Image (cartoon, rainbow, N blue to C red; front, side, top):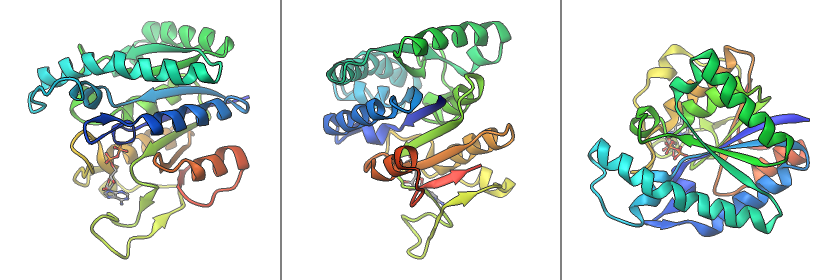
Length: 251
Ligand code: ADP
C-alpha cells in the first residue's frame, strides 16, 4: 500500500469568518475514499482562522495568533471527528513542530505513533503546535511541515490541497496568460525566493513555500502534487482514477 500525506490549506477550511463545513465534509469523504487505496496522513492548517470565527483577537500580533490557534484547533478537530465518524473512520491529533523532526529520537517517537495509528486505520491529523512553535504560524501555513512529515514518515507522495489548482508559469491572479505547469522536475533558485504572494489574509505561505516544500522532496527523491482543495475532482481523478489531467506534479 502506498502512503500519502494530504495537506489542506486554511482557505479551504474557513471562509468569511465561518468554518467551511461543506468543504470539510467533502474533504473527509475524499479521505475516506482514499483510504481504500492508500495509507493517509492528514496535515491541516486553519487553526488561527477557525479561532477567529470564535473571537476577534487582533491577528497582527504573533501571541494573539498563537492564542487563536489554540482556540481553533479543538474546533477543527471536532469537525474532523464528526465528519470522519460518518464514514466509520477514527482520527487522532498530533501537534508537531519542525524541531520535533530534527532530532532522531523525537522523530522516531513521532514515527512510532504514526505507525500504530495507521496500522489501526486511524487517520493521523497533524498540525503545528503553535503554542510553542512559530515557524508555520508566521510563514508557511504548514507547507514545509507537510514536506517534513512526508519525508520522515516515508510517504510516497505529498498532496497539497490549495486555493490554487496548480503551479502556473506566472501568478494567475495577475497574469491573464499564465499557464498551468502539469509536470515540474526542477525548480530554479529564483523561483524559490520570489516574493510570497498568499491569496487570503489567513494564508501565510503563498506559492513560494509550496515550491520550497516541493524542492525539499525533489532533493530527496520524493514527489508532490499541488491541486485545488475547492474542487476535489482533479485530485480524485489523479489519486483514484490514475489520470493526471490538471494539477502540478513535482517529481
Ligand atoms: P493556500 O491557502 O492554499 O496554502 P496560498 O494562498 O498561500 O495557498 O498560495 C497560493 C497562491 O499563490 C495562489 O492563490 C496565487 O494567488 C499565488 N501565486 C503566485 N504565483 C503563483 C503561480 N506561479 N502559480 C500559482 N499560484 C501563484
